[in-house]
Length: 501
Image (cartoon, rainbow, N blue to C red; front, side):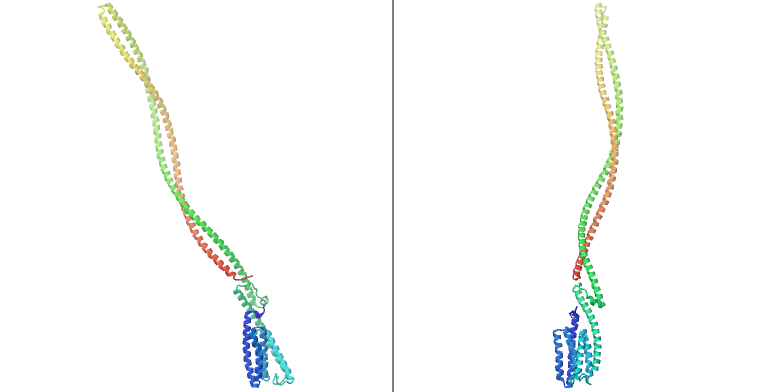
């Protein structure tokens, strides 16, 4: 990259143009004084004006350009030559050459130094040869032409020019490096890190090498930062989306936990009511068990009483049967008495007949016979009554026996049913005991289930609170992730300012 194209170098050389133009103008003032003292004022004015006109025009039209620098260097040497001419070749006037050569170093351009040295060398050789040719006004030294002295002066000029050229080259390199660093700083300020530093310059300057290494590290770091910012933004957006999804899920879980808590509490209340009802049923079953035991005892006692009644009725039946048999035998006796009464009545009738036949003699026998007949008649009537009564008694006995048979059968059936009832009540008592045990087990299970349900309700409620806490945390996380996403976006926007490719 040409040095003149670097802004810092161009500014310095433009300032050097103006500085040297002022110096040469001041030096022209000195030559005017010399010309006035030597009576050559017109030559001093004309020569100085001509020599300064070209540099002044170029400084105005082409500031900092190479042609301007060369013209300024040539003008400086020619003004020195004018001073030597006006001073009559005084040795002191030659000092201006070395001073102006040193001042030309402000251009830090070895070409200007070399060109100026060449100009003054041509001047010295030309003036020395002119003096040798007999031109008296072109006096280079007070003692006249002296090629040896010219060569000595030339040697000093060469040495100074060489030293100044080396210094200029070093300054130029430093300025190139500084200018490149300044350009790099401006490009970096504008975000352009893609342009590498000049390899040729960097190979000659440690500062440029460090700057190039820094640029590469910055490029690499920015590439990583840009990539990381993109990934961070994507990750933040993904995390934000997942956090929002988790927030929705947590909110749904919170609502579900609330509903579940309400349902579990309702179930717990229902189970508590069932437990209370089961406890009441257990008490009722215990009471039913006691009643069943009492019923079993009563049924057993009733069965035993029915058995005793059956036995008593059987004995009564046997007694009635005996009475019937005796009544039958009494009926036989009554029948015999009836037959005897009939025969007695018949005998009394025959006795009356015989008494009637006997007449008066048999009247007493007739009375007896009549009494016997009346007795027989009453006996017959009594036997009829007894027979009727015995018949009624026999019928009553038959009815009683039939009734007692029915009672015996009923009592037998009652005994059987009482036994069956006792067995049924025993079965009922056993079932009631089993049911009581089952209800007690169920009541205990319901109590445990109620405790478990209350514990579950508490855990669900705690889970709901944890879900709410999680949801609030996720909302905070979502806010943090969104802030992180904004930071990532800002970082990405900031890094996009830099161009690394």
